[in-house]
Length: 497
Ligand SMILES: *[C@@H]1O[C@H](CO)[C@@H](O)[C@H](O)[C@H]1NC(C)=O
Ligand SMILES: *[C@@H]1O[C@H](CO)[C@@H](O)[C@H](O)[C@H]1NC(C)=O
Ligand SMILES: *[C@@H]1O[C@H](CO)[C@@H](O)[C@H](O)[C@H]1NC(C)=O
Image (cartoon, rainbow, N blue to C red; front, side):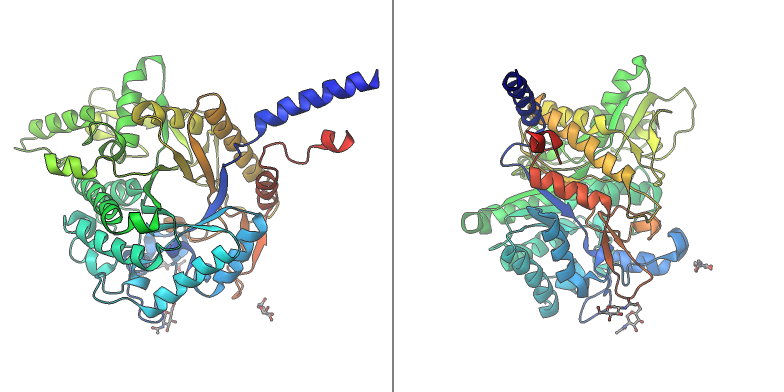
């Protein structure tokens, strides 16, 4: 009865295979960001960004006083980077444009020929290799000259950004079809202004973060409207932003309401104005902060209101949703009088909640990154429930280590478990996830962690002036997933049959 056995086996293999295959159009990529990889901070006519300034001015805030002055030297090694992307077999490469390299004054009065050439080279070489460029316009590196005028807390920043976006669309939009305006405004608004461990390093909790939050929404929206009016009909691309959202779950059964309130603060502040039907701030948060502000004796809310026109301007400014996921947290109501730490990692003083972790969650070498693969599926389901059946591109996901080994089993496992949950979100929950981006192509400058924390599919030797890149086990694993378009890689049974 060998034939019967063979039929049974092949039927079950097909079933299993089908279950672990990604949808045919699903795309895979890897990401990087200008300040984290380029180096060449002072070449040609490039001006100083807030990260150049922050790393040089506050070395004590950064592990080993590290700067991105040289980083991976991708300014010179961009061809090697594209080779790495090509060897992984990826469909796209997500990278960011340095505002100060392309537009050194911050304003469109002057475009750097050197900056233009650098990004044209990357885009053209990617396309020659049939790799789509996915381009982030802003990944934390504001021109310092604009910071001196208030940066993200000056309402004019929305127009400054839209003018920059117009230059970027006009130079590169004939070839770039997937755009991200802003990467993780929660990092450069909330972590920056509540905690101070992101440039500009100016701490103004409960005030600066909200002003920044509102201005990022307007900046994104104005850039999107520029695309709509001036470029979309010719260029036919897609525009969104990338939000990092930590999945938040109730600490115990009684904390369900606290968790949902916290999700509105975490996921809602940078999504509700854009992706919801009503637009504007998440109502529950807007109400609570207005009440708090009143109790504090303020005649207005610390959370700046949107005008009716602004709500309409921002609402619906998306063609898909960019979602960065790394980790999860627990949430509980604060006890009366309890001191509450800073948002987003310790608590949220404005909504009286305390953030924690579960003892069983495995911590990586990054203090903030606990491994919680089910969180990505739950967050995807929440986004669908809140904002509808929107196309979602996972724009970052990855695992930290302080260990530089190329045999990185923990990272392989992290990718495998998260991709499994992404598949479940697609197949069981019907979430329209259309692609996945590994963070990151290679070890790089991890902001205040300097070079001490690594996320790379490739190891980079920062002691070697060549910044030699070496693929890790996770690169091999990811390449095999991409090649088989499935989580069933190296399926021995198929070979035996
Ligand atoms: C880092 O910078 C601080 C302040 O400038 C200095 O005191 C310290 O010695 C430096 N540490 C290292 C490891 O270079
Ligand atoms: C650029 O910065 C490097 C340090 O990273 C320094 O050695 C070099 O002299 C600077 N070049 C210019 C043109 O200022
Ligand atoms: C850097 O690369 C060049 C060219 O491949 C090679 O000749 C040189 O030995 C390398 N340097 C180091 C320190 O590895």
